[in-house]
Image 1 (cartoon, protein in one colour):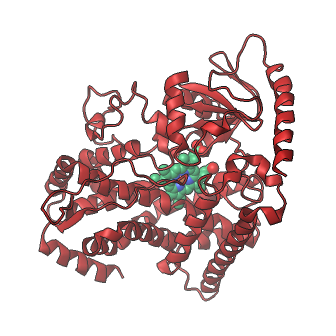
Image 2 (cartoon, rainbow, N blue to C red):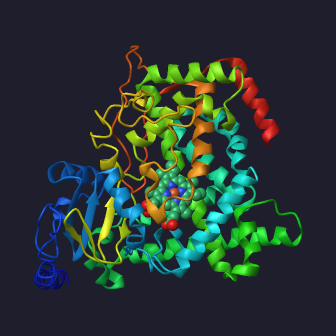
Image 3 (spheres, helix red, strand yellow):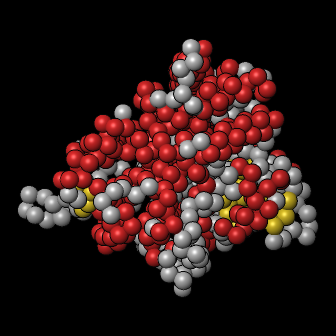
Length: 507
Ligand code: HEM
């Protein structure tokens, strides 16, 4: 079987060379980039995890736009915010499709995972409905829900900091479960579903995503196909069960506001099947867990490594809020906290390789030909390291958002820095729909942590500081810091009592 696949690949590589390179218009050219074997490309040069670091290295060599070929697909990589806006926002109509994720059954058409759908009628109706529900959740103050879950997360962090990943993922899961289904009871299953889908779309787990010909292997030689069938069945069972619970509460008139309630109510005019409704809401849950918790983990890492910034945020919190925790309406007076949040998103992007777009018409950019069907990667890791916009990009420096001399500074400071429309949320018509919720979660959680506790390096038995790894991040397409050791101290005992009281009230 393997020799057959190799000879098939070589034949296709010849065919590809003939069809694609002969097709390039004479006045334009394929962007520069690492060349490999025609059709196959440079697959051996692509690591299964942390590939975004290689993408950035290539951008240094080939420029802010470069191209590679992988198993017959054209991939265009962008390392500049300006070019990404030019192509994906201004000419968004040409580049709003998605490539298929081969580990999933039919990611482009099955009415399941909104962020992975192709540009088709299913995507349009789901995006419209989700946008309406998210807008309504702001208008009806449902985005204040993170505040209700905050005291529990703070108390858990104060008592068992070594389990910080669990506390923060549970915090995000409880928020999204409340929003999705009206209460937090499903949080553990939401978290499992998020992790399951994340692994299913990550080359670090499934080589078949990076090497598409592997999908033609028979089922008995493809354990990953069996794993996907099982994951999908479990996920579907959970999404349908959670939906049935809300439907039952609606019948008895006891259902609180939730994404699911709104989705089910909308069925009278959208005519959406139950299964699709279950997936729209389930997907929102999945999208909102590992993304937001990742940045909150980076907050702990950044504050452990940079105590001077923790002091600055705490001074601002104390000055603006006095003895209470920050609330969203404090935001205009808290540029330092917002700068720290921005810098966390820039310094350690949550989806560092971004989600690729797919081009539906031939296009040209700066003399380069972008053929229909190309995958466009606005690689967040490279864009947030572009030195023209972010000098000394490896340095964690929130001042780059506060000092007028910095290229990323924007006035007025009552409004900026502001994570809305930042490169981490993508571009154009596929831009992230969860930005407002993310903004609420980050401001309250990071402001709350700064108010309640001081994090610092741990010391060993000899009193020597234990070094904290700066670069150890996970291998999946949504990354998070690996476990590291640090200490947490409550800023005052009175604050701990206040948080405990608040938790009792919030229940
Ligand atoms: C820090 C947190 C988050 C980050 C970094 C993030 C990042 C992204 C990115 C990169 C995309 C693709 C954009 C593109 O293709 O150009 C996206 C799409 C999406 N995000 Fe987020 N996201 C976050 C939080 C959330 C939350 C909290 C939700 C909802 C609860 C959410 C829901 C979605 C949805 C539904 C899409 C699909 C949009 C579409 O394809 O039309 N995200 N997000």
